[in-house]
Image (cartoon, rainbow, N blue to C red; front, side):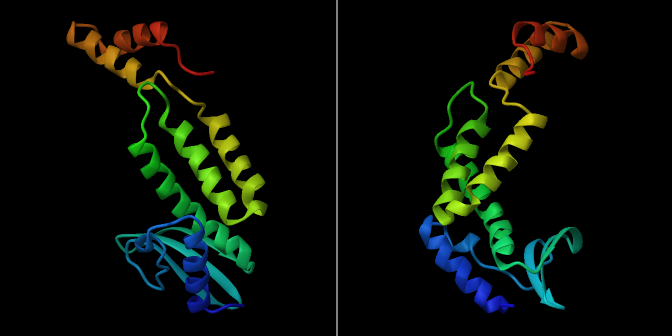
Length: 165
């Protein structure tokens, strides 16, 4: 099992492959807010804390799985920053972000491609792309300003700009 310092070095090394900002590459051992890494009993524990409360814990003995999990968060941050800088009106922001996330993840390790593509597919199966969400919300607001109830405005907005199936 590699030390936390070895993990940090590997994260920095792989981060160079995708030009990741150094401030999002640092692996904390202790952190009251955000992700941190612990290792004990021959296992890595990648933990999300918020205000001192543990919200999520990923445990593995596999170094590659740990790196994938760490970079899953790093590439998400980078992909959504990229999307924000390259936003397309009336298009689900995830179209650009997910494509960038797959690109970044694959640039680190081609062996991670299938895994990230499956994760994106699962997300989209539960929450399909919705290119009309913004215009639907704007129309809904306009109709409510004209006196329709929230429910009536939403129904009319969905008639004009249908929800994804």
